[in-house]
Length: 230
Image (cartoon, rainbow, N blue to C red; front, side):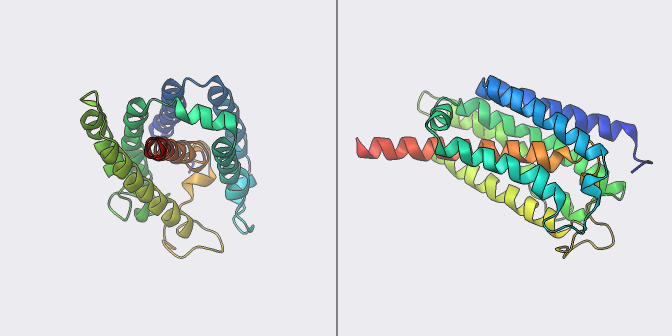
């Protein structure tokens, strides 16, 4: 990792900042902004320490201290009255455009692969098709909101598909990670996420994108149910 070109780290740092700033623009939630900044700062400290680099722990430390807490917060949002009110006010058009952030993420993953610190499975040359989500996000946003009557079926279908593509990447990443669970990429595992700033990919960027899809799906399906009841 010491020989990794500085521009890759700087580019990814800008992506992390862009992810938090863009999602704040979408949600207009000061709570998210404060939590996001604080969480990123904490993960930065953990990423620069040796904590995540011990990979024999079960569950892996990056999962325990980096991935599980955001998932708990997501669950809390969907189960509380305040969280449900937050979901209802999300601007779906802005949220759809937000997923364009995945294009530069895929570029960084490709660069890391060529540097030998992530598996080919994590790139569009392997089994990562998440680039589709980033490229199609502006098109889907335009087609869905070009008229006063938004295309909810297109939005719902696209969010479900892109969520599945994201889950495919996550599962592949776990299987190619140097832990007792590793099943793929033994010659070139995913070691970049053990180091700062790339540990912010599974702990900040991916949970935010994942949250974005769940917000959209929840809002689209809940509104549909309400109309059917009326």
